[in-house]
Amino acid sequence: VVCQYGRGKVTCVSSITDANNEPTQKYSIALSSWRLDGRSTATCHVTSPPPRVVRNVALAQTQKSKATNYFSQRKDYNLAMTTYARAVDAVRNVQHDHTSTNAVRADLVVVMVTCSNNAATCCIKLGKWDEASQFAKNALILLDALYGKRGRKIHTFLNGEGTIDSKLFGEWRAKSYLIVARSCMEEGDIPVLLEEGGIPVAIGVLKKARVIAMGYIDEIKARQQTCSKEEKASLKSLMLQVKEIRKLSVECSDKKKATKKMEKRRAKAMFGGDQENSPPAKANETKEGQQQVGTTQKKDKEKRSVGVTKTTPRVDMHARGVNDQKEEEPYVGKSSLNTNKNSPRPAARKSVSFSQRPPQIKEFESSAGGNGDDPWYSEHKEALIMLG
Image (cartoon, rainbow, N blue to C red):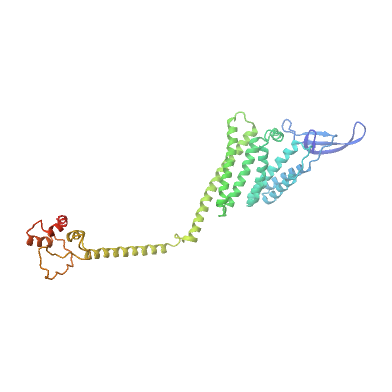
């Protein structure tokens, strides 16, 4: 219930008479929003006005306690998840009016965030990745909305009760991000999600979680001498979450590499053939390739040898003249001093001579005596110089 002194539970209802001797009821309420010395609870007795019943918040808190017992003691994750979900549903559609207090609104935020994250943790244990991600995202929506209203009534009320910022926006948000990242990483086993979501999304979410956690860690360490007990406890939890973030980041990287390697193998098997699984075929292909190369080299060698016997060297081309003779017809030794037109033409040579003094020069020396003014000499002067 909620009364003028705060919120709590009714422990006793008794009938009394008021100052006008009229019957009325007295409510004994154990206040949960009050903390006395030694953290003992306070009890108040209310007659008028009667306390307002807040059944949904009380039901959600009861369901949360049961679910925590199922999770930690009995290890019944399925029942714990169902009970946490019931606690969330109990306060999901609560309608607020002008009589709603900040204490009730704060209770609703705490119940919905913690139960959503705990239900997501149960889903992780059961391998229900989609449901885990959805529960964690619901918690993030509430925390982001509260983060945008820092310094207002609900935020101030939560801080006054001991729910500090490093716990609200550090631990709880980092936990939600870790659950989302784990769900995305497990979904990354599907090859389609490798580029569209899955593992790359998980890596991005982990970076956000690390930035948030390290921000509050640095803030608490900067004033470690003056920090409260709640901040010290929150620091330990944040350090553990940072370790978990690093571990999950390594798992994401390894899984991304393994998934890419698997995709390459599938592509080779589908389009290019798996060369690793067929070494004999590869050996045969190499052998055939070597035979083809050897045959080609042999043919080229034969062509070069045939070319030497059938073609005239470049030196002989100049020796016989570059203007009058064709490459296919070897030079025929003929002196320009021989004026006998009826003499038969000598047969064409079928071999190439590489002697230092070709027969043309010998014939010229014997017939013309080496006269440099002869037309034959003028015609073949350049070839003779090159040959010499």
